Amino acid sequence: MSHFSGVLQLTDLDDFISPSQECIKPVKIDRKINVDTKIKIQDDGQYYQENDGALQKLEKVQITLADCLACSGCITSAESVLITQQSQEELLRIFENNRILKIENSVEGIKFIIVSISIQPILSLAVRYNLTPNKCAAKLATYFKNLGADIVLDMSVAEDVALLESQYEFIERYRGAVNNGVKNTLPMLSSSCPGWVCYAEKTHGSYILPYISTTKSPQQIMGSLVKYWLNKYANDKTIYHVTVMPCFDKKLEASREEFSNKELDFKDVDCVITAIELEQMLQKENISLNSLQDSTFFNPWNHTGENIPKLTKHVGSGSGGYADHIFKFASKELFGIECEEVEYKELRNPDFKEATLERNGEILLKFGIANGFKIYKTLFKS
Image (cartoon, rainbow, N blue to C red):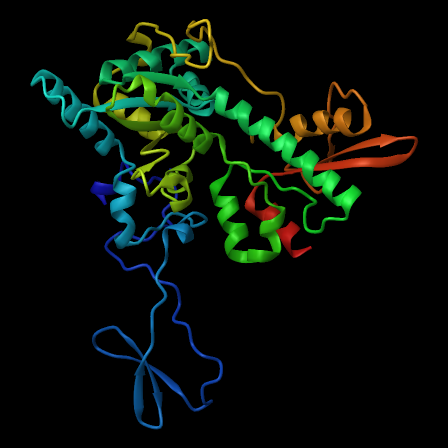
């Protein structure tokens, strides 16, 4: 287990399967088989169907990378390579390899390393080291530059793009459903959680997929911006894109085939590091964030060329503020009603809230926030 200690971690939980064990789905059995059919397990561990004295080998259905997204932590040995590529050890190896190549004045093989940092890990580490969020961000920028990062970015631009794209998608869906009678467009379900998206895909498939927003998560939007727009800063070097995120599921999201360009042979995000792993890296090197100098994020989105002096935040829930942002935009765009603040009514518990827009007693819009898999399962059942 020592090899994976920095790769997958579930804090105090122990309900994961050791990588040395083979992780498989239950054997699929044809329901049309004879009632007298028996299932036998041979010495080689294979499952066989016995029918009238004849043995037929049963296929084992392997867990895929997508299956792991909504899992409680286990991975298959076949996919351990993909997860290892998302580890702190691999990241440090890339930095060290770059350093050696630069010392040797070798042009070939050097990567242009770009690090994008999400706001949630900054807040977590700010509490850990008793820093303000802006101070913590400034010191994290210095830390990654000291490691060898060529550019360190704040991910707020990707979060902005995600909100803007989501609001226009909702307006298009609403008008299509109300004005043109388009089916299977409302309600629109928005989430940046890859675990939730995979849970919906696996458990409800084609029934739920039409309702899920097609807008990428901020991490993958950032990946597209970095790989397709910032390559002008790379001077023909291969871009190696690192994101610092709050959740281990983001590693698996970055590994999905949808977020790679097969023709150009690259992924939008090459490596995902969580706040826990980043803290482990600091502890291993005996570095305290408080001891580092302050520096700024690079800001290629600002035409004035100024770097970002401080962090920005979005109003709304901890999931990114989708409900608040889209609700306010839709109320003005669709009904001409200015809504400065969205008021939520708690339903079954604090994790399930609802907001409505009314005019003259008529309900015009109804939005909801649902947090946690227990709530999701309840909603899907209903």
